[in-house]
Image (cartoon, rainbow, N blue to C red; front, side, top):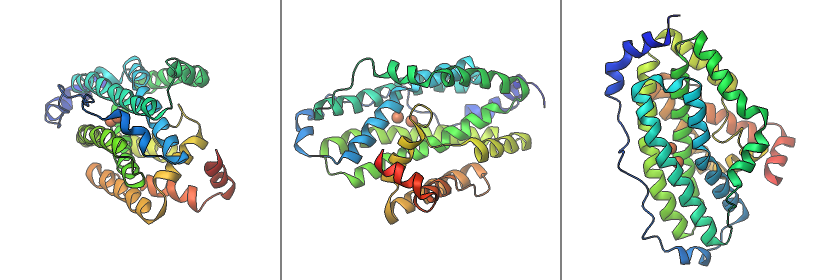
Length: 284
Ligand SMILES: [Fe+2]
Ligand SMILES: [Fe+2]
């Protein structure tokens, strides 16, 4: 299969051309009218979605730790991206938590530690698995980049759906600013995935991993039932269906994933699949 470093040399020139997020950017929050946040009530499902998103954004620190310790950050372009990405995603988490605090749902300062303590052995297993797979194949980075593109596109679309579903103008503005950066992240991941997936073995590994292990963003940190609950909320109804299909179309066509339709399949499993699972998603 070749060594990972051979892949770094082989694709280095093309990786340099991938659209990069603006590293000086962070979501600016100084002019947000936080005092107005409480004036526009949110449904329980909307609040659940904001809390879920805040937890996942704030968890980027641990995700980047896993990627670096697992050997995925060796590509210099990916390494540079991770440093900017971590900063921007951390600010996204702060922004959502600031909104929640202004709304009256203060998040404990120990929240992230508690979430990680709950993950137990699964937390440590991510690094171990990445290290093992990285020694076996030089194409693990292609899996990470393609996976990242799908998750960023889902996140961007999830934020757009949250704006459609809610009428709180403070939340709209915070989420609109975050979503703009998610678009930049998506373009980086998708561009880099396109480069690394050119190798036929990389493409085979990517498809194998996605078909067997893909789950929506946040699952693992959050429970399966919690992930199903937010996905059922954000991707509900005809507009949700259209949004899910849009994500699939973007990633399948741009990266060349042979009509994987991951989100459509996941959505169908919630709404048309196991009714017991659907009920659990609705009530958790
Ligand atoms: Fe984010
Ligand atoms: Fe992002």
